[in-house]
Amino acid sequence: MSNNNPFDFQGRHVFVAGGSSGINFGIAQAFAESGARISLISRSADKVDAAVATLQATGADAFGQAADVRQPEAVAAALAAAAGRFGPIDVLVSGAAGNFLARVLDMSPNAFKTVVDIDLMGSFHVARLAHEHLRQPGACVIQISASQAFTPTPYQAHVCAAKAGVDMLTQVLAMEWGPQGIRVNSIVPGPIADTEGLKRLAPTADTLVQMAQRVPLRRLGKVSDIALMAQWLASDWGSFITGAIIPVDGGLSLSGPRDFSAAAEATARGAR
Ligand code: HXC
Ligand code: NAP
Image (cartoon, rainbow, N blue to C red; front, top):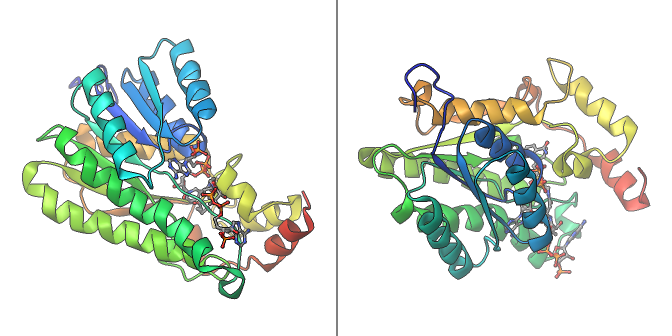
C-alpha cells in the first residue's frame, strides 16, 4: 500500500464470499477501483460470471467461482484456487447470507437452520479455511453482520441468532489471530438502498419510507457507505482496529427493534 494514499490497494488480493451481488459486490468493486485483484464466490455460476465480467470490464483482475459456503470442501477448493491465482489473501470479506421474514412458529427447523448454516456456519467455514491463505502478518478479515445481532427483532429469529454468532466469532478470532498480525472486524450495515436484503424487509413503498424514517439520519444507506468502511478497515488507517463491531447505519441500531408485521403481511400478499 502506498504511504500517500491509504486507499491504494494496488496488487492486493481481496477475496469476497457472497461477492456476486449487493453490498458485497459493491465492496469488491470499490477495492477493484483501488487497484486490488478480486476473487469472489457465491452459489450461482451465472451471478458469479456476471459479477466477474462487470469487474473485468473496468480493467480489474477478477476471478470468480461458484461455491456454497455451507459446503466446506467447496469453500476450501475455491480459496486454494484463488490463492493460486492471486497469491496470499490480504483482505477477506465474508458476507454470504440469506433472509426472509417469518415468526418462529412459522419456521420449520430447516428454515431456521438454513439461515444459521449460511450466515454463521458459512462464516465459520470461510474464516477457518481461509486462515492458511491469509497474509501473515497484515491480513484483514471483514465480516458483514446486521443489527439483528444485538437487537432482538420479531420475524428475524434466525438472522438474530446467526449474526449474533457471527459477531462473537469476529471477537474470538480477533483474539486468537491478533498475535499473527491478522485483524478481524464486523461491519454492521444499516438499511442499504437497492439491495436484496432491504427488498426482503421493506417490500413496499410504504414500508421503505417507514424504514428510512426510523433512521436518525433520515436516509437509507448506500452501498458505497459500506464499501468505504471496508476500505478504511483494510487500510493502514485501520491498522490498530480489531475485534470491533462497527455499525454503518445512520444510527438505526440505536432506535430499537423494528416492527416487520406490515412488511411480512405485504410479502405474504405478494405486494410490491
Ligand atoms: C418460512 C421459509 C421461507 C419463508 C424459505 N423458508 N423461505 N420458511 N418463511 N419466507 C424455508 C423453506 O420452506 C425450507 O424449509 C428452508 O427455509 C430452506 O429453504 P430453501 O428455499 O430450500 O433454501 P435455499 O435454497 O438454501 O435458499 C436459502 C434462502 C433463500 C435463505 C431461503 O431466500 C436465499 O437463497 N437467500 C439468499 C439471498 C438473500 O436472502 N439475500 C438477503 C441477505 S440480507 P423446509 O422445512 O420447507 O425444508 C440479510 C439480512 C440482513 O441477510 C438484514 C437486512 C437489513
Ligand atoms: P445479496 O445481494 O443477496 O447478497 C448475498 C450474497 O450472498 C449474494 O451474492 C448471494 O449470491 C450470496 N450467497 C447467499 N447464500 C450463499 C451461500 N450459501 N453460499 C455462497 N454465497 C451465498 O444481499 P445484500 O442485501 O447485499 O446482503 C449482503 C450482506 O449484507 C449480507 O451479509 C447481509 O446480511 C448484510 N446486510 C444487508 C443489509 C441490507 O440493507 N441489504 C443490512 C444489514 C446487513 P448467490 O445467490 O449466487 O449465492
